[in-house]
Amino acid sequence: MSVDEDAADVTRVLNGDLSAFECIVRRWQARLVALAWRFFRNQDLAEEMAQEALLKIYRSLSRWRKEAAFSTWAFAVALNLYRSRLRRFSPEFVALEAATGEIAPASPDLTFEQEDFAREVRRAVALLPAKYRDALVLFYFHSMNLSEAAASLDIPEGTLKAQLHRGRAMLAKRLKGTFSAIKEDR
Image 1 (tube, rainbow, N blue to C red):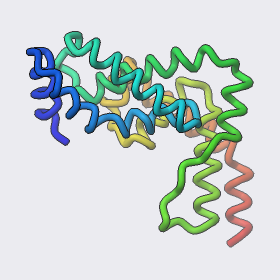
Image 2: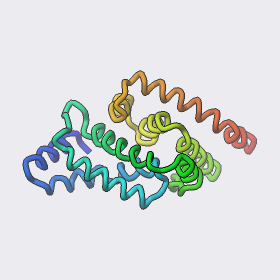
Image 3: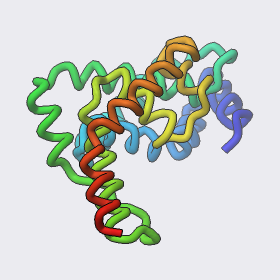
Image 4: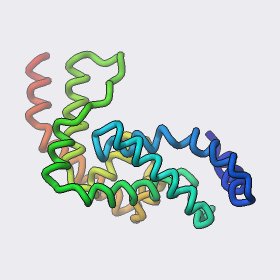
């Protein structure tokens, strides 16, 4: 996918060619669903939220400043929407859903132990405070670089680095027992 394709499609939509938005949807829908799933741990809700995000993106296209990559801007719109919806749920619901929700299928190349560990990591990430969880999800799970993730979160890169550092430290602490169990198995 190309930055030029996004910019060209946005221009076409803004000039009245609404069919160009279909191209944007095809390019970004799966990623927005994946991001929503990491927030809500429910596939139906993730798909619904991604649709809401795409609608909000469509309605806001004229506000996209082309200094930022379309992907960065679109993820920022989606993140704000997802966070807003998440605040409607009680903290107990969010923690319970994160701990017991569906876990995305792992790669077929992983061993059972690796898959189990990956599941525990995802659960631990889901239970982190939002600012650390969001930073880790964008940087590691969605493979954004520092500048893209920082722009999506609307924070300076230095702040993102600090959140990543603290988030990794919290994860290491939460997963200490899991690491020990894996080492004992070997």
